[in-house]
Amino acid sequence: MEKMIENKENTNFIHQIIEKDLLEGKNDKRIHTRFPPEPNGYLHIGHAKAIILSFSTAEKYNGLCNLRFDDTNPMKEEEEFVKSIKENVKWLGYDWADRCYFASNYFEKMYDYAVQLIKKGSAYVCDLNGEEIRKYRGTPKMSGENSPYRDRSVDENLELFKKMRDGEFSTGEKTLRAKIDMSSSNMNMRDPIMYRIIHSEHHNTGNKWCIYPTYDWAHGLEDSIENITHSLCTLEFEDHRPLYDWFLDELNVYHPQQIEFSRLNLNYTIMSKRKLAELVENKYVTGWDDPRMPTISGLKRRGYTPEAIRDFVGRIGISKNEGVVDMALLEHCLRDDLNKKALRFMAVLNPIKVVIDNYPENQTEELEAINNPEDESAGKRKLPFSKELYIEKDDFMEDAPKKFWRLTVGREVRLRYAYFIKATSISKDENGEITEIHCTYDPETKGGNAPDGRKVKSTIHWVSAKDAIDTEVRMYDRLFSISNPLSDKEKSYLEFINPDSLKILENCKLEPNLKNINNGEAVQFERNGYFILDKDSNDKKQIFNLAVTLRDQWKKIQKNKK
Ligand code: ATP
Ligand code: MG
Image (tube, rainbow, N blue to C red; front, side, top):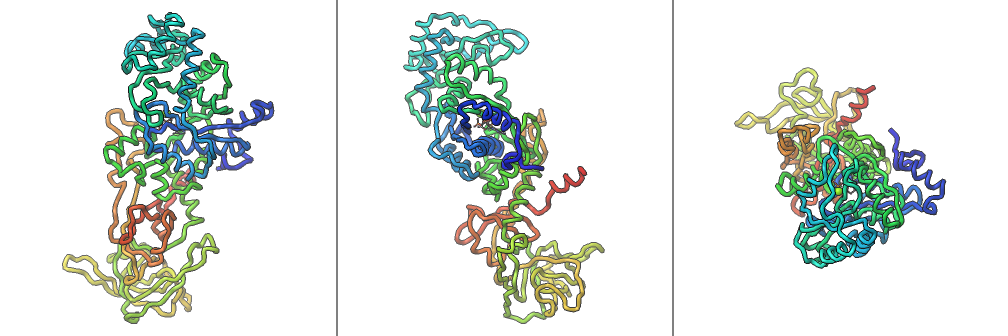
């Protein structure tokens, strides 16, 4: 598939609109977009699509993109979220320069605009409560009814609106509404609410305001104030566009163009901030940055790279088609990126001891290993080899079936970068568990090849026992065990949380070179997958997270399609 966003040759319907606008000289050929998160949670991979679209569109056409916090609701917004959003956007590789704005900084301007509409007779103060407003609104099939307060005089409206601002009414007692059309076929146009009274402290404006603008009233104004040219948002706002346009036309102010595209939906996860918050608050996960979360912070901690996420968003493309993207594609993009970059190491996750009976006691030799077969410039490293090693438990079988090519008594295999070894016997404890596999090695096969040309059927990884680092590895799997956790009408999505989404392996053995690995740098544990050092690590103990295994389901899916 082509990269639709990053590749300059390619285009999507939004870029086609922009190119037409440029050709026609619209907005003096300026391109200015924005990313407008509400700071009420951490951003998820769906937001990454919106971020990448708005910022890369500006980049492509030498324009600008603002970061704007749409903080019009005092109830659920927090500084922590503002901070995490800024970090996430930066981490994805984008720069808003000095253009980080807060919608709440425009409250005074918005108030003035509202007064303007009241003076025009296009807005009124309404005393109906929430339930009554809903009743008067009608249904999609039935026209609504005018509010009994709709015909208040301009002077009365001005006075009441001032009193609303001055805190003379209680929460919910009155609203300011646009006077449009209670019989419009578009429900959003049936005298929508512009302001509601909420006596609640705001993270930015404190107690200055007790009336707060609604999204529909505020958003177009924010875009207009910031001179945005193309306001890109998701399809659920399509039905709100007539209202967006109505407010700007009524005020006769600079009028950006709203364009909608389809949201990203991904299987095996959920993408609603409210539900993600529920997972965090009820401790189904360890936090917003739990490596199982589809949040940008979670993906980062899991080992995802900005390159992999940008590649993913490029591959899914921008359109108006609603669909569900396969998680396997996201995972594929990560493998694709890490395959090129990640240094390879040996790590044994479920260790069992191998004793090489004919290897000299107390001897250690340094063998040479390749750091990244995909990148020669990554160079080589030394691996200590000694008499006692660890291999993976499941690389040995006592009663091996015919097609088991790995180690069993009597069979010879290659130890990666080391020697051929042959298993001769096993020792067991009183419970019948294997404690040691005894082997002999062939000193002639140093480096992993036999001078006499004899072949072995498999190559396994290993770690020198006395040199190994003990570590914890957290094996992550998808957060939900079914593809669409919201599909069941009877059961809550919480019932579909994958009970095996985290398995902790406490007794892993790593090659000593991993001691110096950098925080935040993903590595490959050969044959096991890509891993990243977790922030829970300390001086005494390293902890690694599984980013993704090496089995690429996406490639398989594509192959089966052909
Ligand atoms: P959620 O529905 O997950 O709670 P939201 O839409 O309320 O998210 P906002 O902070 O309002 O979150 O979103 C900021 C921007 O991100 C909006 O322009 C919105 O259209 C876009 N966005 C949100 N979710 C997705 C998604 N799944 N795919 C693409 N863009 C998205
Ligand atoms: Mg929203």
